[in-house]
Length: 190
Image (cartoon, rainbow, N blue to C red; front, side, top):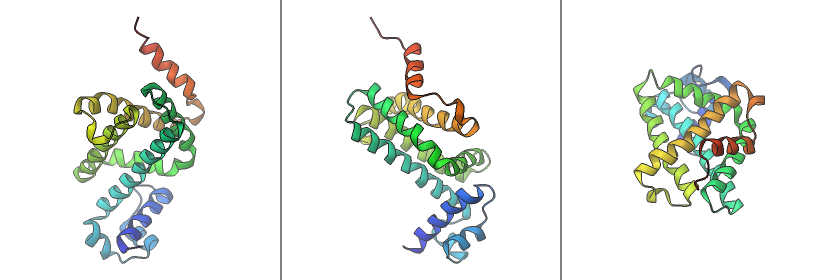
């Protein structure tokens, strides 16, 4: 592993163990075995390193969703959404600590333009990626209006259920209940 990768691994460990707001540069250096100054050299600041670690960790969710949808061989967008929700609901308990750190990063974005910039870029990528996944397209083929509509809706499902899970895990709906809720809002056209 390179020193940069060691720093990212150390930051991720600190995100899980201490949370976003309580992690110091010294914590990351200790967890990674790297020199404190190497954070500035590789990332410019501790906040940039933490943001990069959060984005990389949340980016792995896209890989989980993609693997689940591909394995299911679902073709229609509603079926692909069902598979995505199932993968999300199964993964939530395994990634709880990292999810808490991600939510802390979202809150921090209101007070730090650097955090906001990094998270906004990740948000755009996530919306495009989710729309592409649901429509079985390459991300580059997703029209901006589809990214804004379908991609945002899918992202809101992911983050909304994530927050619900963190606050009250027992109240999370089943996949069937979530899909039925959509059907009530969007009845089949005659």
